[in-house]
Image 1: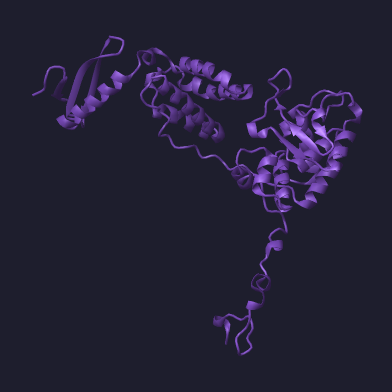
Image 2: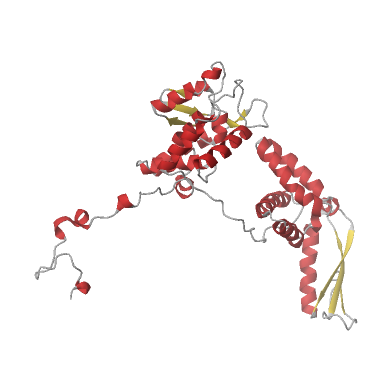
Length: 379
């Protein structure tokens, strides 16, 4: 016997249904309206348990989420995020979430399920854009987490969705003989290109930092890094990627001379690597020249791999992980070691362990004269 307010449970008379019982109840929502909820199950205990769980979810639901569409919520979330992120990041949020808006944006926020999100991700993977699918999952996870904080929903539909498998990024470094080929090929391009490539290889600066580098920050023995390129900023630059990216990178006298000679065509420009008319370089200019140079030099590396090359050269010359971290502008040394350093040709040959050097005179033979031969190798 059920008490008043517990709802109604009755047998399902449709023989075609697998479930045998149905439970119904009218609940009062937070805004005072009433809503009828229905659940089905195999036993009375089963439907009663489902009914209570469903009632809890409905009671926790914000009435705003029942009327607000996902598109409307994303507009509000983006407006909330805009002051806290870089302009470039904000535009990336907007562009990525368009895939969600066109597919499930008209759904009510409270009705969006993990299945809806999974269908969006599967569509993107089938279309050959798994990286885009991974970004959609990451940004939606952030957005729904904020919806939970605002108490619009009681559960994040992305929480239990598996990460999207993306193809690994092909990372590489220039070997010593390839560095010379690249530099020679770079000399045949625009006047600014050889100094930029030279500086990238021997300082590890990001290409955005190179484009935004003012000549006043270039000193005879060091470069002060305090900004990065931004095509979305009226000034042409923005604050560095992380606080650790504000740093000082030492340079050799030769690098300083290369930078100065490379801007003789625009001595009055404020930029370290000015265009032919003295203005700030754009990323497309660098990519265009780099694609020509890497083909001429017969190397298969990205422009960003010049930064990895610098890190590997520092490691090869004995720099510690903490030193490489500071030079690259990372918050911790783990990324520097895991991603930005690589083993160059011949490096392993230099670390072969010499038994005599390790053990010295203690590495002797047996009394029968078989010096240095393991016991299991003796006849």
